[in-house]
Amino acid sequence: MTSSNSTSSAPTAALAAVAALPARIVAAWAAHDADAFAEVFAEDGTMILPGLYRKGRETIRTHMGAAFAGPYKGTRVIGSPIDARLLGDGVALLITEGGILAPGESEPSGDGAVRASWLAVEQDGQWRLAAYQNSPRENG
View 1 (cartoon, rainbow, N blue to C red):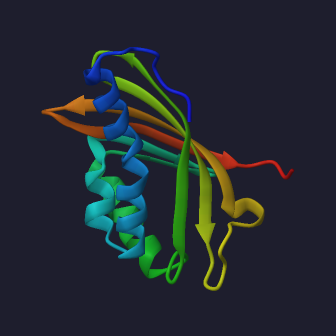
View 2: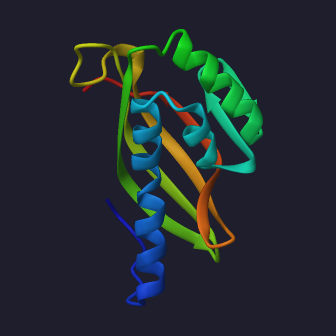
């Protein structure tokens, strides 16, 4: 993972907090907990997936609740940061690689393998997602 070149501990701590966001999503998904999933997002955050646009924490919560009970039932998700950088005070960009794991899978396959952009903002001392977008990863 690449990061800011600053020698100050504040940017390092901020980048570590931002890089921890995927683990929060992974944990919420593993529990199929739409509330915990949505809490990672800012109140007016957006989630863009292929063919899907959701805006607002409550809309994301409702969508994920239905998804965990339906098409995502029994699935897991993985994601690891491959790039992170601070864009300004309280704003960071994180790029991850991962995807959705169907039951029995240890690596995502097909359209389930994605790269994602996470635009994070610091609000009241906590990092949240202002915007998340993923797209299928190329093979190879």
